[in-house]
Image (cartoon, rainbow, N blue to C red; front, side, top):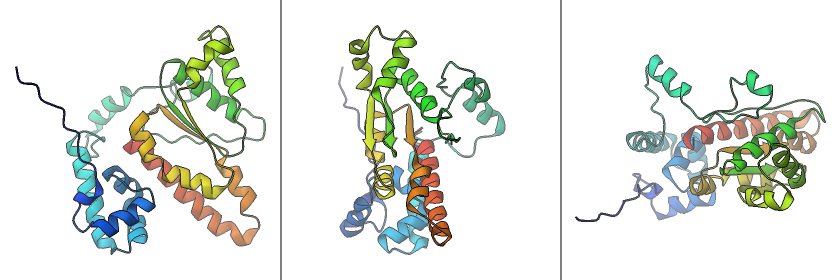
Length: 250
C-alpha cells in the first residue's frame, strides 16, 4: 500500500492574476492573506487597499469565490429552495438552554450575525456568557472581543458550575483555555482586531465569535451630529465584515 500525504488547498493571494509581491504586501498589511479574505473584504475595499482598479479586484473576488465553492469550503449560492431548506435545517445550533432559545428557534446558528441590544444591565453580556459556557463546556473554541472591559471569567465559572459541567473553580480551568480573549479599549484597536481575525478563525475554528460592547464604544468616541455620518459608515463597515466572516468561516 502506498501512503499519500494530504495536500492542503493553496489559499494564497499571489495565485490571482495581477497580485505580485508588492500588491501581496499591501494586502497583508491590512490582514488580507488568503482567498477567504479576498471574498470577505470585497472588490471595493480591495481596490482602496491596493490602488488596483475595481474592475480587476472584481475578478479577484470572483476567482476566489469559485475556488472556495469548488472545494466545498463555502455554501454554494445557487442552491434551490429545497436544498437550502435542508441545509439550514441541519446546521448546528448552539443554545443557551433558556427561554431565549425559543425566540431563536433553538439557538444561534452558523453563517448568521446576531445583534443583541438593550439598556444597561438588561443581560446582553450574560446571554453571551451563557452561550460561551455551553460552547466551551462541549470542548469547542470561542473568540471573545471585549470592547468595554466587562468580561469576567469568574462569572463564566459560576455559570459552568451551576450547569453541572464542573464541580469547582479549579475544575473549570480546563474549559477556560478554549477561549481566545482580546481586550480592545478603542474603536481603532477593535476594528484592527476584527480585520485580523481570519488567521485565528482558520486555526482554531471557533463555534462562535462574540464582540461585546462595540456600539457603545462608537457612541462614546464619535460625539455630536458632526460625526454621525462617519460613525454610521464605520459601523456599517464593521457589520458587513462580521456578516461576511460568519458566512465564509461557517
